[in-house]
Image (cartoon, rainbow, N blue to C red; front, side, top):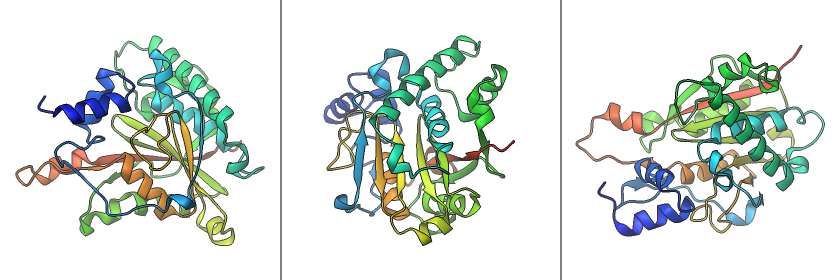
Amino acid sequence: MGFDSGSSQQALQICEGNVERAVECLLNGNVPVGGTTANSGVTNNSSQLSLVQSDISQYSNPLGRSACTAIALTLAYNCIGQFNYALPESFIDSTLLSKSVNDGIKLYCKLRDNSSSGVEHSSVEDILVACSGIDNIIISSLTLFPNSPRQGVLSNCSSNQHMGLEALLTQCQMDSSESYAAVVITKTPETVLVILPTTENAASNTNAKFILIDSHPRPQQLAPHFPTGSYALFHPTLSSLVASLREIFPITELGDGVPELMQMMYNSFDIYPFQLSRG
């Protein structure tokens, strides 16, 4: 496919020897290939970040390699009901991560077995619709914000900043009626979860955390933590959270000869902000 040996070996290390997943990482720019991924120019002060991780990731189970969306929704469900009673950092631990990964893989397998589509990577919409058919508790507990999902574009161009991660996540903070929002982010083929304090909560509580929760191991990313299992990375600000997201979802530069629309398609992402259902 034109990838150099070094990049291919790095992708295999990141994906724990899973060839199909390694190819996806290379194609989607998650491994630098001859300078084709662009650095956002934003770096994190690692001393301000704290990490909690589990011994397992979605790749620990052979059935879990494509289960990240189901795992992210399971994590959202496991977190969202506790926001009114406890701070996220008090209950997001290795036990919750391991349980959510295992439960998310079970959900993914159940929905896949009940589906005739043959699609390996399920979207958030696919899972929500499928869960409604089996009366899954995720459906009854999670409510999408109005005007969702929300689509954005990874870009260093100032004209696209209103569609960037920071702008869209700031809007989620403003739209949330709870103390925290659980926001599922998908950049094909990967899905992660972020936990955001509301604008009011962040302003009144200087210790409020912005949290990235991810079922993928990142042994070559997020220095100096380099998580080898599923993990939660706690950030002091939205900007530092966005810097971590830009590291795991780098901009893919396709070259000057590629139409802008195709550039935007390769760098598009979807945001699904959830809050606790009432009633």
